[in-house]
Picture 1 (cartoon, rainbow, N blue to C red):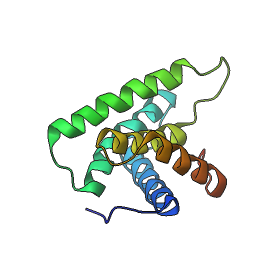
Picture 2: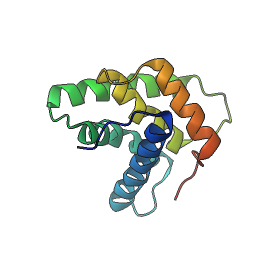
Picture 3: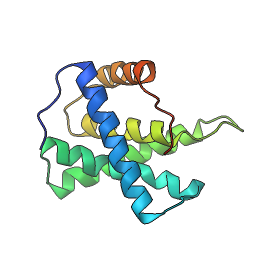
Length: 127
């Protein structure tokens, strides 16, 4: 369990670190993931978020999975034709959305963190 971040900058750093972990886990499963396999990156978000917050209740983690998957499906459904899927951004949103599901972050705070991430990090990278 990590100490809960207080500032937007700290949340952004933690989320970006979680992204690196998720890409590493995905690469362990798929050395060279295809587009469908890259979508699986999001499935790591609630587990990593739960670990970082010390949440081991399987029901809470499952609830976060459902919350994230609903939101991810909505995001993908709103994607314009020909627009690329930015897997790292989907993960970051999922990671932060898990914290909404856990009752730790508000929608407004997630928007602030995502704005900070987009200004200070390469959030669309793929290793």
